[in-house]
Image 1: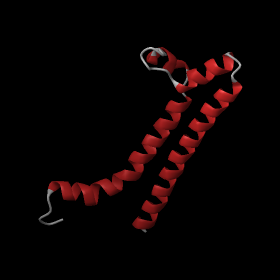
Image 2 (image 1 turned 90 degrees about the vertical axis):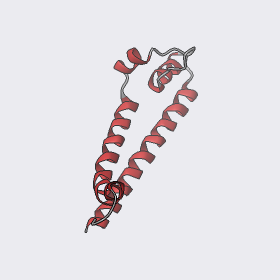
Image 3 (image 1 turned 90 degrees about the horizontal axis):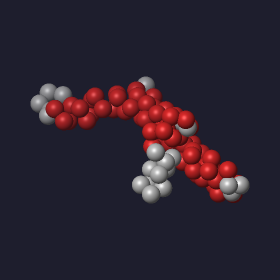
Length: 101
């Protein structure tokens, strides 16, 4: 630490300690954003013309049009993405816990 630049101190000392908390917060916010439905529809506008559709609303539209295969495919893709992100965060936390011990 003696003689190191501010960026090196941040990169080697501060950031490794903050990384698990930042990743956990990102993962939880992302998972909640995937599941949020009611308020997101009003905020996003769901305009196909302006490309602001929300995945949960698209799934609901597919279900309303009795397109179960498309709705299932979209929901499964989002489920896999959420699991991959949460698994990655868990693996990083395990790695961080081993590093601290």
